Length: 159
Image (cartoon, rainbow, N blue to C red; front, top):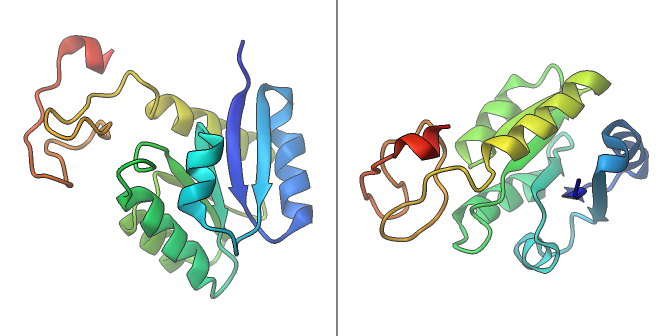
C-alpha cells in the first residue's frame, strides 16, 4: 500500500506532531509554514490532502484555502481545515471558500483520522471530471463552478 501524502500548513509544531502520530505510518505528513506560498507547495509536493490549521483570526489560512480551491492546478486537491471547537463561523467560512471538510480542536484522534481518510477517498480519481476543463468535481455538484458546464456522471464514476 502506497503512503498517502498530506501537506500540513501550521505554525504549531505540537499540532503537527500530534496529527503525525494520529495518522500513523500510512501517511507521509509534510509540514509547511503558513508564510510559504501554498499553491507552489501543493504543486511541489502533489499531496493527496492539504490540512490547514486555522488559528483564531488567521486570515492567511482563509486566503490559502481560497487560493488552493480556485487554482486550476491545485483545485483537485482536497483541503481539510482545523479550527477551535466553539468557532462554527470559521468552519462555515472555510467550507464556503472551498474546504472539503473540517475537524475541530481539541482533536479527537479516531474522528480526525477517519475524516482525513474519507476526504482523500472522496477526492480520489474515481470522481467525475468536468467535460470542458477536466477538473475533478465533488459528488454533490451537478455543474462545474469554474466554467458552468453541466456534468454527466456515468455509473462507473458513482461507484
